[in-house]
Length: 296
Ligand code: DGL
Image (cartoon, rainbow, N blue to C red; front, side, top):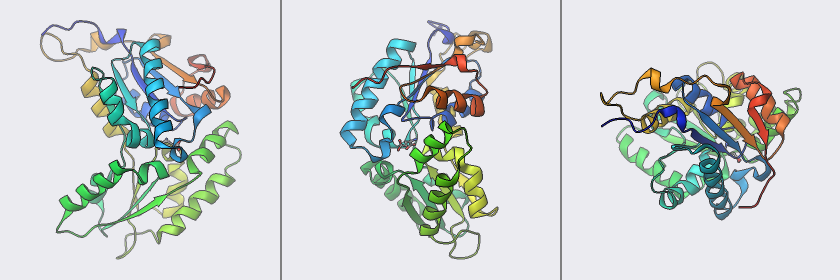
């Protein structure tokens, strides 16, 4: 089947409640360096993890419409565990012709690497208390049988927002984030590779990837820390590739290094987005834009 259009004409849309999804964009950029991306940081309405399902569903629909209008998107990556947990099914129903890729806590890979059989999972309330997460957990536990595996589930109220605020302060004040991380990890038990200890920690929120180094210092070198960016990027790549006559995408078709190949939008703090874009994606401030917060 011939390609109907070069990949460069349509962008991959990505959204999150804030800057957390930039950790997924980072992985997608590495996986698909020639694609166009349009990123929406919904900071004016964060944190999603402490909002009602209806609220997050409404925002997710609104943002998808904005991404379609702004970037003529061919795929949408819901780079937020909380929005994936509560909204992805309804997005798929509402936009049946648009492929959606979501992010979920990587429970299955965690079981694969855990030696002690104790796996810690941190995320937002919205994610960890969702029906979708409960279903995933039961399935992973059933598949793991007869080997033993125990999940220690820890919702981390306030952590995503603290990471967001820390970015606004340009990384100078890390105290609140440190206190929250220490508090929640203490609640979970002890970390290490001895019997009975948690030897694997799943980051079930895209914001937490940006404090991985801090978490590493707290749990120690023997603990596996698992995030989902790379797996999501591969899936987005698969769904976004347009087949050519040979059935294989070509680099020529995908090549796009123009300055508008990545555009980032926020309805919150522009300086926080600029700072995060520079720090984690080495992108200049010209790629970042502010848009007035509007109700969905
Ligand atoms: N980054 C998000 C997630 O992966 C949402 C955090 C929030 O807004 O509460 O869950």
